[in-house]
Amino acid sequence: MSVGERLGAVRERIARTGRNPDEVTIVAVTKGFGPEVCAQALQAGLYYLGENRVQEALAKMDAVEGAEWHLIGHLQTNKVKLAARRFALIQSVDSRHLAEALGRADSEQPVLVEVNVAREPQKSGVEPARALELIDQVAKLLHLRGLMAMGPARGDPTPAFEALRNLRDEAEQRTGRALPILSMGMSGDFEAAVVAGSTMLRLGQVLFGPRSSPFMGTRPDNGRRG
Image (tube, rainbow, N blue to C red):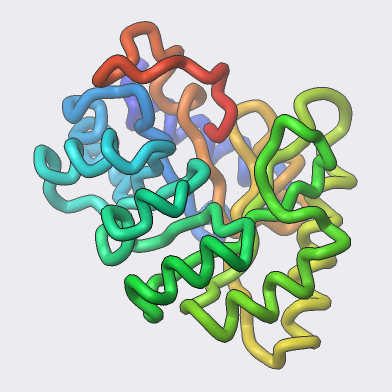
């Protein structure tokens, strides 16, 4: 099955939830795949490409034209200067320290605040109880566009996704600014995310199949972010 056919199937599944597929942005998670897969995504109309690691992404940026690149993996502060201005959206800001480092590099960098609504210790993201405080801080330092989260590893993801949506709504009231992006939903749980109000999905395996030959020696992570 081609990437275009897989994308069509995804859009049909979104439509069956009652949402208009045109209202949900799909970020094609190309981490672990080579530039040829990035090119296939672009040919299928997937112009937003998501990467976990800065250096892997930079190599692909030099090889693939026409994409809008998103960083969806954790960003270390020692990689901030490499990442700032290169990514259209950094989705994984989870601390004031990181926000300040990014702000020094580029105060206009578009970002999302990542929240650990699944409350799982192996996941990154600010704790929900501290999220509103961090959102306030990030909004003063960077171009804050919304929130991001991963669903739980097991069980019904709906409560976690609804928690992120509620946090976004509260943050909009508190800051007085629109936060239009809710990036939640991956290959295994995107329908629940769409029902809960997701505006952006991070999809890898459902579009490209398994990562059998990781690009540039990257290690497979079982679809952790896509």
